[in-house]
Amino acid sequence: MRILILETKSQKLVDAELLSARKMDMKGISDGWKFSWKKHFSLPYSKAYKVVIKSNIDEIQGLLIYRRQRTLSGFSRFSMHG
View 1 (tube, rainbow, N blue to C red):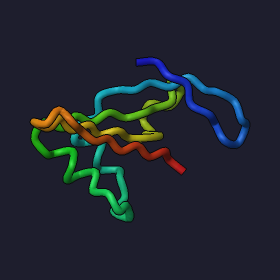
View 2: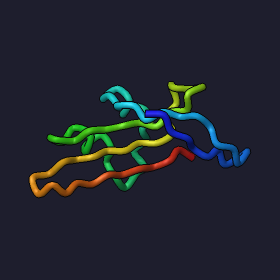
View 3: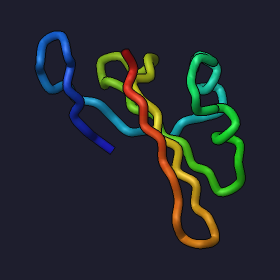
View 4: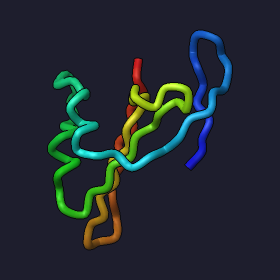
């Protein structure tokens, strides 16, 4: 999915994409978070997505994890890089 994100240095909108995240994408996530990305990525019914800038798809700018539960409620976490 094509999206736009704001580059804070230049205050310009840049083309980005929301892509499915893979387990290997979780390797680069630091352990300093109060939220365990790796743990929630592996939970049943969880789906992870990553935000990347089109000009640099190797660097993750943000993550979103959605978990569908039986009550039809879910949660998501989003965190922007830097």
